[in-house]
View 1 (cartoon, protein in one colour):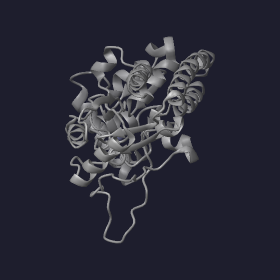
View 2 (view 1 turned 135 degrees about the vertical axis):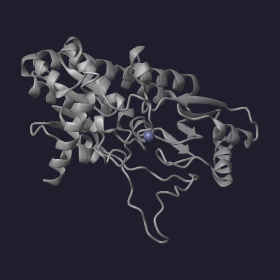
View 3 (view 1 turned 180 degrees about the vertical axis):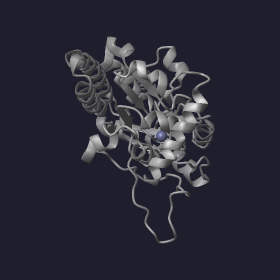
Length: 330
Ligand SMILES: [Zn+2]
């Protein structure tokens, strides 16, 4: 009851506040009452939904919450975000540690018919936990009291598996078909066409991994690619577990990774798009030959509205990742 009243107060305040700009006030929403309102927290959900909607994209009200490029692991929604989610027909989120805030948004929803897709729930048993590998920097924030073992956390970067993408797109399509049955045939057709593209990319990655002599990736950075490496039988080392909040690598971690480069004869240190490359460079400076290259893989976790406008898609970023790997995985 208390939560309901809080939201009612929020909605009233919001309605007053937004009358000026007139974009999404409850009043002018009346004219588009039949329009499906869809809210996605992260870019992959948003882009997949776009691909499945196809030519029907203009008929729905589709929002992507994290379009400022904010770090999804520390993102906090605004009141406007919460209201938009609370009033939508279909809400997609990860359902992991980073977006625990979505539970409040769902609990306070004013739409009792709201449908949800939680990516980690869809994967069920196929969801994997973050894995501490030898040489990784200890995560101070996640380390519990002395002697207390912290429960492993689910790796939230499920979209970095093209195979997961296929499964998730299937679930999104079924939700859209149920909410908008008159266009269901189109949505299923779009899914079939998109699945073919995902399959083609999946086969490209598999062939690349199968043909590589050296199947170990070494990240002088955070490591959101566990689902990806698992799919293709690749091994890895990394400075930090998952998207750890740690930013400093200890001397031990740097030396361990530098020695691994020497031992395995690797010529590349990988980073992700948000990195300044400082740790990777330090690792390289500590190897025997000091001549390894740095290559950047995109984790697709901080795509901005501007990138969306200029045509960036999930497939274009994964294709970029393929091109980078193709140039470096020997
Ligand atoms: Zn991450």
